[in-house]
Every structure is written in C-alpha cells, then in structure tokens.
Length: 407
Image 1 (cartoon, helix red, strand yellow):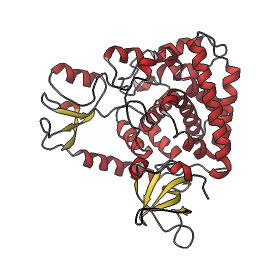
Image 2: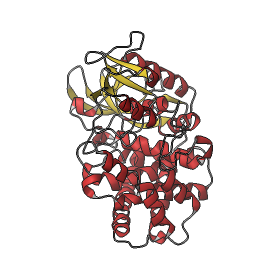
Image 3: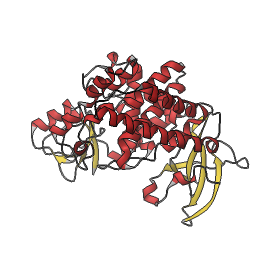
Image 4: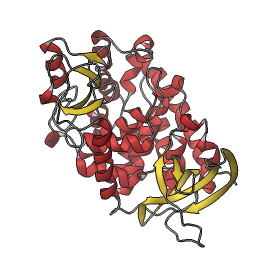
C-alpha cells in the first residue's frame, strides 16, 4: 500500500516510492529505494522535501498515515474549493480564430531559442533586437486568446524539449503577468526572462542534459550550475534588464530556502522570480522527457498546490490556477454523459465548468461528431453535462489536440 508521510516520520527500513518533488530537486540516482542509512534521510531533508510516499508492502509502515489516494483526494478537494471562487480573464478572439497564428508564433519562437542556445554555446553575444520581437508576438497572441498558445505548448517532442520549454515558460509568464494586470513593460521583461531563463543549459553537455536515466551526483551538480552560467552569459548582453537577469539566476530558488544556487528565503525572492519558479516547474512536470512521462495538467496543478505549503507562494499558485484554469486548454476530460472531450476555453465565471469539445463516446468506444458543450450552461442552451474526471490521452490512445479547432 502507498502512504503519504511527513519527512519527520522517516525511519530506516522504509521503502521510498515517490520523493514528491520535481526532477531537479533531489540528488538521488534513483527515485525509489529502501532507506538503509541515516545519511539518506539527511539528504532527503537537505533537499527540501517535506512530504513523500512510502510503499508499505516493501518496507516499514506508519499506521496512522493516510493512503496516497486519500492524500491526493484531500489536496484536490481543497484545490477545487479554492478554484470555485475564481474567475478567468475575458478573451478577445475565439480559439479557432487564434490557433493558426499561435502555431506560427510557436514555430518562430522555437527557432529563435534554438539559435540563441547555439550562439551561447559558441560564446556569441545574445542579440536582444532579435529576441524582443518574438516576446512581443507571444504577448499579442496571449492578449487575443491565451488558451491557443498555451494549449499548443503542450505539444513538445522529447528532442526539442529544452528549446520549447523556454518558449512555454515565456508564454506562461506573459499570460500570468496579464492575469495579474501587471503593466506592459513589466510583462515584456518577465516574458524576456522566461524565454532566456535556461540559457545556461547551453553549457551543459548533451550527454547530461538529455540523459535517459537518473543523474549521478556529479551530473546533478553540473545541471545546478546552469542558472549562474545563464546569468553570466546574459550579463554580457547589452541593455539586458534586471528582471531577466534575476529570473535566470533565481528561478530554482524556493520559498523555504531549499532551492539553488543561493538558497534564498522567500522574503528575499522577487515576486516575478517566484512566478517564474511556478511556471518553470509546471511546464517541466507536464512535459514528456527522455527520462519520465509528463503528468496531466490538472495533476500538475494539484502538485503545485500541494508544494505551495513550502516551496511556492500559495497566493501566486492560486493566481496561476486562475490564469490557466483547473482544466487548462487541451486537457482531456471525461463527462458525466460518458463522452470524452478536450477543453477549448475557460468560463469567466466558473473555472470548474469550462467549454469542451466532445469527440468520443466511452459507452460505445467510438469517435462521435465533435460537439461544443458549454458546461456552465443549462440543458437546451448547449450545456447540461459536467466533468467527472480528467483523463490521460495515453490511456485512451487519443490525441485531444487534434480536436481543438475541429468542426
């Protein structure tokens, strides 16, 4: 049985099933192992891990600890209760109207980041006059319909992850800033920081960056150098502002002081940097990588909500939930009627009842003609259904992104 325990309850002989942290937080070569030394417990604590999962069938138990399922359900219920009181931002254009332009923006930004990383690897200066127009294009797309580009950014190949991750972080940072009504210049600088935040990875050997298995401690240390390496590269960039520099150097810092490179406590971390750390982890844990399968967006939001007790600013995590929605655009959901559909748009008045395009029947196990359902509307007005769960596309062998703009 899997159970959730606090780090203070760890004992030798327990079997660690899940360290409950993002990939680059812990320094263990494996993520599942039996505790055999006090040093292992000390390293878990030092890594800033507060709660984790144990497998009682393979090691010692904690009698009164909740099961993993109970713990997850409690967090999700709390998250949904918070979301029920939130509204989303209005849209200027429909998803269908923006999707083609958003795809062009994504392609251009991808190409730019690839070139920037190549130049950085060769020791060439980054040219802001090439980067800033792309940030502007991303911003304009977000203003027209944030869901279009955010939804498209879920599609990443494992080989292009490093480049598309930077585009995603830029996209999400711009959307996050706009949802908080930050001014245009601050938003532009935050987007620039998002696009350039991983520039230091240009100096990480490909064998380490794209390693298909767990990193060794030495390789982990190499990865942890990328914020400072990126900062040093950007310092040589004429007219680079303090916001992109701060985001690049500190996006792996955590509110409890367990992050890197400077182990800064939360009251010393700039708000935009706190936002970038949320966005960075959200995109990282939802993406397929060469060493792990990405989790559904709603599960990732639940993780961020859970981790906000220690690692992230709780108010900003809730604001990010408002920004992308509990069921972000592109999420595959199962409806009470038995249909599967893809979320196409948030409802301004209710994050728990987005607009969905249903395209598959679980009862007959066949595709159906795509139909728009506004879950906030009653029967006879395009509604009268509700989400019962979010689903893994892999489980069903479906590609919901095909149906975002389908008719």
